Image (cartoon, rainbow, N blue to C red; front, side, top):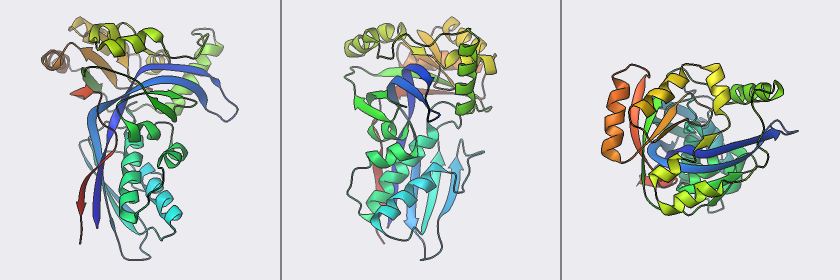
Length: 305
């Protein structure tokens, strides 16, 4: 049997970062929203004893490892271990989410691989505890929609949101390491350049804006504590943020740990217009348009032998 699953990219409408914890992570409060930009993972069984083989294709395949470090590989092995079978699978990942970009593309692959492996092996258990083991954003990749994330981001609950939103995704081929961005934030805080939030909590104004369905209201309350660190590491990102607003975006923000930037538009035509203007200035390697919120991880195809 061959199973294909798709999982969404994420953006953080709010990303509040607390102090460094003893386990090396930071406490977070974040409001996630899923984009209709999705990676696909297809798996099928190989002969017994052949192990796992992982192939990468798609627009953003460059630099993605196909070895044991790939989260999709870890995900299928986790499911196989729980079921009690030898993990002999071929994994094919189609990358449509920019890599090392703050959009949780690796987490999306892990979520899709979990869902596909659960279908293939007939595993009916809860995938959320497995997702939590794999990474901070994997749980949200399973859920999709709009959600509040706490702890290190892996504890998620749905949030009421109305309307659909159009985003310009401004992607750079120069990825940023998430740990490096967090380290830079800690350094800036130690130096007194930026402050820790007085209280880690979701912003009521943002939650109210999501209920209202107003893109203008949401634009006024976007926030990302990692943005100063990302800008310190890649200063040219500030120019991208500025140009997006100059070209008509309601607001612009570094996506997660960057270096991708996102710009909120009034509607789809407005997003296309902004994307065309930014593309003409050669500030980024690729400019995409995406819509939120989008569904979480879904099985998209099952082919039986």
